[in-house]
Image (cartoon, protein in one colour):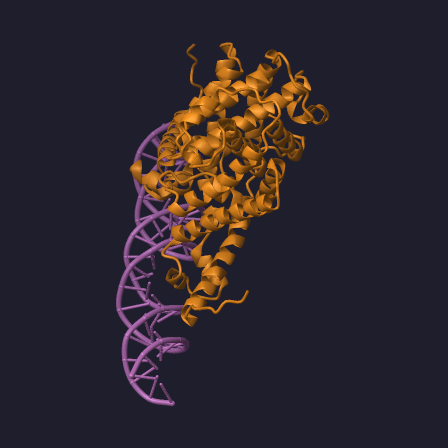
Length: 216
Length: 216
DNA sequence: CCGTTCAGTTAGAGGCTATCACTAACGCTC
DNA sequence: GAGCGTTAGTGATAGCCTCTAACTGAACGG
């Protein structure tokens, strides 16, 4: 569908430059991590003077926050797309790993070391809950055959604020949470390089954890 | 036991100042994260000029590397101490959590976002294997009653370089690995604040994961 | 077509890392 | 205890960085 672009030329130009800045930011990020992200260097690459970028982002933090939001949105989009294509938990796990491996620094932007005082903006919590919803849907649809009762279930049944109005039973809540934490555990250590030199294949460990999640 | 300090006065002074620098570094780290760690600020706090610190650490990276090594050693020490006191897997898990909560930024120094090019120094891999040994000991000593065979075990039986000469059976290797990844998954997300506002108690989730590890 | 808006400029303050030449104190040796 | 080499700490400086401020020129919109 083709829609008339109601934005003024200035707005369109502005959006385009913002996007270009973020593009450069992503490549810098992938190359040297968030720490090394430099507005000055980006400006130089784009052939303009340093302070020019402050027309587009109030400061370095705002640019990074924007990248974080885009990363969240990217993950939520891939998840939602897979879910709409009928993905089960295993497929979602695989999609998560692919997404993480495609750009490790993007993963760390979302799930890496936080700055002590940092408060996530409202938007990201909304996107997080979108991701959670996909996960809860999958966990609810796909109940494992024989589920051993977990001592966590009563607690989750009582404190299920994060699940909103989702009709998932406590066991599904638990499985969604452990899906998140266990896969993040493997991915995070793998991407950080903690498995290098150990000899085993991280993919196999990931697959085994995925299987345990589906089966239990 | 009191040993004669064979170091020269200069060496002793040097070690003392190095320690003092690291002390200030730790407080800065806990307050604002590794990113904000500033040699200049530390020097000012200690009442000396910025460049003076370069007598003690070649550069900022070397100081941080030193902190990382100390963090590793601290974790290894607490683990070893608990193990010598007859700790089982559950105790080790509890010790890990206490260690992480005591100083989240220290945890992230070890297990947080890595700098893309960074190669861990030889020392840390040695300390890591020390930690792994304690873990493998515990997993070997404490075999769960009915262990469902995991598809991961054959792979680990074949690729067990990281376990060195440790006599742990494949299932123990797997349990040590999953101990690490699962608890790290929960801890990392908790410390990063990803659970805040969700309503449930991270400690309960951690306890449930610990229990699952011991029982399975 | 002309006034307004806004992108981009240079200059500069203040932070940082890191190097260099220098000084002064310290400790080892005789 | 005197002298001398070693070394801790200094200020100056270069070169990054973020971010502010004043200015300029071009593009847009009525």
